[in-house]
Figure 1 (cartoon, rainbow, N blue to C red):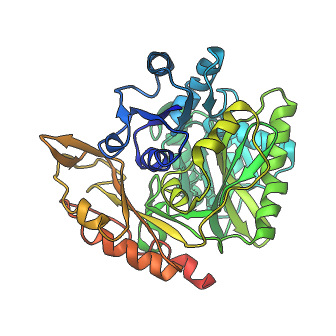
Figure 2 (tube, rainbow, N blue to C red):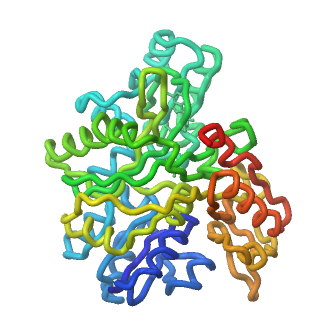
Length: 423
Ligand code: AMP
Ligand code: GLY
């Protein structure tokens, strides 16, 4: 089977790494891929928001199965395009991808489906924002309706800050068009969990829970990023907590979407806050998480190509995947300046040394220049390893991280530490 992975980040490198191990995989392709993926797959240049180009790649290579990594191609309708040509693909149709591309739509679905989430009001003018901001206690959360690459959420500590931010977002000054509609919502306290399930629109199979670390600095300080590291550990959610999230969050959404004639297929990712009143949804993503996937793939013992094929065929089996009991984790090494303007073009050394003792280094923002791997984006590498217990996974991953060097590298030194209390 020829498999195409759409995307070119660390998540896609981890998917390609896992797919390459499947007996069903005869050949792997990636569009556009990256220098790490290029060691496993044929990388074809592509703009991932151009569904015509992606379809042309799949048709000319005779691809049997496609899996989409990032949200942008899903929001651009790549699944609609592939399905209209009868090509098996894992991901939601454009209409269902609105669960991520429109936070207002996601809120509406949660309200209709009775899914626990923060109380909120959707506003479209500064006057409406002014009234809404007064309805909540401080801090108050402001969210741009549209896709904003992780930069669309502001937690305001004063009403003045909230009003200023709301006005700037609505005027298109903070996140462009994504901010023309805003969600004003209640601040939730608790621990965050990434809960991802795969579904063919009817059957739902949960993956193991993971925890991401969104803030740039240790101790969850500093601005939010796409994710600075994640760990995957069977102790994050007990089996009964997992069933609770399935029955209160994932299944109601999947059933609701089917009921409105827009069945959701692919990966449904609920960003949860575990509050004193139970799990509540912060957001939905319609894809796998990055860097959650890097940690997940390391623990997955089942055949990924088989799981994806069942999903694309609409014949997902109820059987839950098998997971290694060893916790895993991924530390993101980012370029200087991230999550703002980043510095690129620096040479990276030590990747082979980092991988010597069993760690894996997934590429994200890298480029090969004159035979040398250089930095080429915000999140540069995802150093990933597992261990017999969480402390061992942490030690092993950071040992690998310490062997990698590039100018201005920044990474968090506390990935996985929140999980230690469960050991
Ligand atoms: P989102 O893109 O909606 O996941 O928001 C990004 C981050 O902002 C989340 O990972 C949380 O850390 C934080 N956040 C979002 N909504 C809330 C909320 N209602 N209460 C507290 N923190 C939130
Ligand atoms: N790591 C968070 C995300 O993929 O959205």
